[in-house]
Length: 403
Image 1 (cartoon, rainbow, N blue to C red):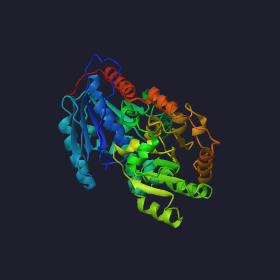
Image 2: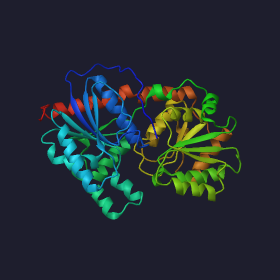
Image 3: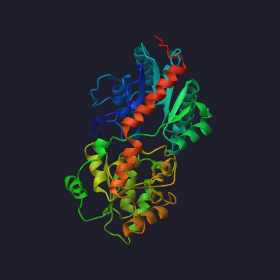
C-alpha cells in the first residue's frame, strides 16, 4: 500500500482576502487507491489551507491522513458496502458536514450524487477527472452499471456551477460528451510535489536501494492495471525489443484488476526475465523508481485526461515517452516532440523504445526535465490557480454562506 506524506513547498502567492470554507468530496484516500485522482485530491486538500482556505474532506477508506491546520478529514467508511448502504451513508454524512460551508467541491460524482438535493443554494464546483461511464464501458462493466454511471454524472453536472478540468483535451471531452457550456469550464493542470520527486540521488544509488540490477537498461511504467492503460501492448512491444536488447528490464508499478491476467500473459510470452510487475509502491520508493529508470513510458490507448505520472517522471529528471492519446501530447510536446510516440500500437511502442536504446531518439536531459516540471507543474502554483477559481465562482454566485 502507498503511504503518503506531504512535503512543504512554499507558496509564492498572497492569501485571498476572503476566507472560504470548502467541503471537498473525494473517492478513496491515497493510501487505499493507487491512482492519480487520489493523489491529486490528497495534495490539493492538504495545500489549500496554506492559502487561508478551510477544508473539510470526505473520502472512503481514510488511512494515514496528514495533520494539517485548517484541514479536517472524515470518512464515509469502508467501500465494501452494498450500493444502498453507500447511498444512505453518503447522504447522511454529507448533510452532517454541510453546516457553515461556502462552497461544495466534488471529485467523485457517485460520492456526491445522493446529497444533491441537500446542497440548497450552495454553489457546487466539480473537478472533472474523466468520462467515468465511458471508462467503465471500456473496462467491461455491465450495461446497467454503465447507464447508472452516465445518469449520475449528468445529474451532478446539471447542478454544477463550474467545472475544473486538467487539460484542453478534457475540456473537449466534457463539452462533447456532456454538452457542458464552455464558459463554465476552467483548465488547470495537475501538480507535482517537487520536493518528493526531485531527490538528490543518482541512478546507481536508487538502484542499489531498490535492489535493482546496476548494468541493465531499465524502462518503467507506473499505471493502474486496467484495460485502457495499454499494458498488454507494452508487453508485446517489449517482446519485440528484447530480440535485439536481451538485457532490457521493464518494471510495471501499480495494482489493478488485470494483475493476474498480465502476469500470465508475461509467462506465456516467455518474458519473465525481462518484465516484472512490482505492484503498488510506497511514496518513498516511487521517486526512487523513477530515478532508477533510464526512461519511463505511458502506453495509454484511451482517455488519458492528464497523466500525473508524466510530470512525476519529469520532476524526477527521467524522460518519459507517451502515446499520442488524450492530453499526453499537451504535456510532453512543449518539452520535446521526441517524447511523443507515433501511436499506441505495439510496433510503435517498440520502435520508440529501440530508438532510445540505440541513441537514434534523443531525449531531454535530466536537468531539462526537472526544470520543465518545476516551471509548469509545481503544486504551489497549481493550487493557487484552483483556489482563485473557487473564489471567483463563490463571488459570482453571491458569496452567501448557506446554513
